[in-house]
Length: 293
Image 1 (cartoon, rainbow, N blue to C red):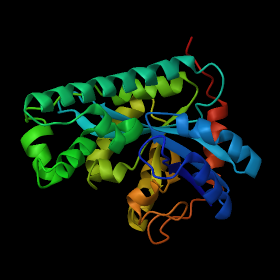
Image 2: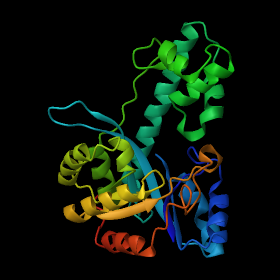
Image 3: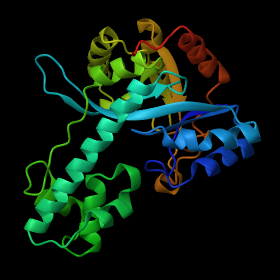
């Protein structure tokens, strides 16, 4: 059994990279993939510990993007998993990631200034204490609730930080096509994360999106996920096979933040991902040489 989608304190998980490795060993997982949001730091921090404990650690990342469609509105919150970006000659990919983080930080500072201009006493340090390395609007909302400026997260978005609210500042998320290009240029595999969530189980729309993303170089889809029912997994597996896409899978473990999701086994033991999934991915990755300068 493997798990190729887990988060650590390097992004929005509550377990340290070392804790995740130790739990993987305790559970006797055949492999575990750290796929933190917009950073490889969790994987890098866990490498030595995994080697010492004999845990097969897979390099992953989950990149927040938006899919631009001709003749249709953009599809927001498209999460792209990138695998095997831990080899040499990945400098261009790391530079691209730094640009994404810098833009996130710019947006957060701008929102703090807007909130302060509205008379709300908030600081960037307070927000980052809640959000860590991937501070975003949910952490702003939580802070506004804690300080008594609003009574709920929904009110925070409606009055202050929603897209039409006075303290909103846009974040320039990369397009999905750009992220696919960057992952592939770095020698990695690009996999669409939790596709059923993305389309709210509208599999007709998913087929359209996959048609477009496949033309842009998408390598695979996350068939096995804690939120996917057995029926959805079967349907997604058929879609992947019919399109010649690779199959991936993972729990999307976040530690205490998603207490019902267990490492390796998902929700109520709905996952049992075979090692063959990783072997197929690795076989494909061996034929993917980095193309970045």
